[in-house]
Image (tube, rainbow, N blue to C red; front, side, top):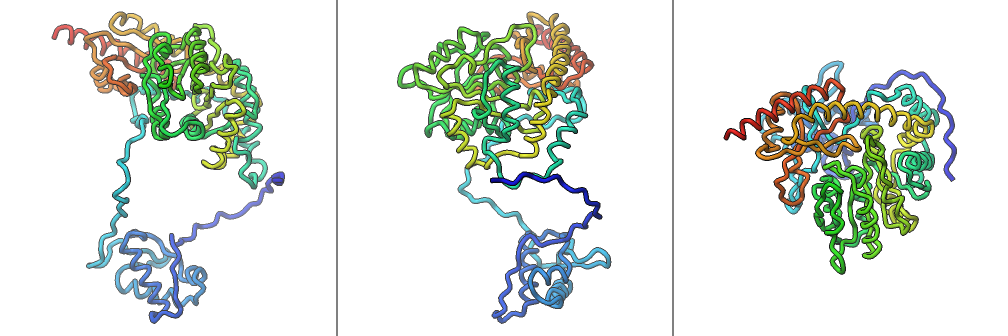
Length: 500
């Protein structure tokens, strides 16, 4: 049984200076014909030559090295003296001994170790590059923290760090208090009845999706996936060994009627029904029911990625698939990345007990659990009602920014039409011919407004021309500026293309 952490005692201590240390242990053979100083010098010389000790690296003091090696102080002093004479080391009073910044003539230049030739090619992860300084960035999946109650936030972390940290790995499903708080939260926010024992915490939704694939899918299983769809999830499933089957999306969401039937039916369907990523449409209720019926008929599972379903605007809420499911086939994935911040790296899976048990085992062998301190802070923050209040504040902010974009871009019809405004933190701006999304995005970038095109979200080639407008991090002024620039650029390119 783990001990109960005791409160930490405040002790005033002077900060300790960092002690230089070698990144390896020097082996010494007292039976070898070479003296101990010669062995130390040879080992350090080789480490300098092969780059393990780069130029400028500080070395331990002779006293510290002697203590680490169990020899008298004179042994490392003699070794350092040899290397100083040869030019491999340099010493300066008050700053100690370090590897020479200019190696002696004839010393080989340190080289980086080459990876094994049999490694497969490195495929870049489908993530957006960091935002460049300046301009307005309409990035998807980026919320605001401007309205965060920083007093409550600091209090939550103070509470989590008041006691000594736990001395064990804890429950592989995650902190029980956080699971209980999240179960209550999704019951309020999403009308989903959840028991804390059926929640597994993960380090973000991508890990949740990878965990599901590795724990539940047989090798090379087929997964039906929205097209266009969430690139990171598609890559995570593919790298877990799944075969991706793209399924078209229209204004009512996933085309359930095009899912394969019979022996060719996929084992899993990935869907974002509350706010399709990236088109922004919602899966119509008849299709939700049809998808559940299809899954029952074909003994299949469904991943419901509800990444920003807490934010709804002018449309009535639709029930999550998980709340309509009475057979335990829906794996509901939620995240704090949109309702709070991606920085906390916290998501969760809600699964029926038989599936939750398999996911728990997979979580345990993957990394034994999550960050106990972060989870304790989040549990305190959510249980105190602060996340609910934060969602209400941000919802008002997002609604205002969304309305600004909608009103300002309305005159662009029929050349450009917004959709996906019913929920979430982004919208899709469909472009009519002859407008080309890549040309519009490039022209916007020259004027300091940065957007993504839809093209990279398709698994199958598509001529669908559209821009993706993330507004979660925008201020009202940002939204006005972005909308004015969009109007100006689109109208100019329309006239230019029309005259060509």
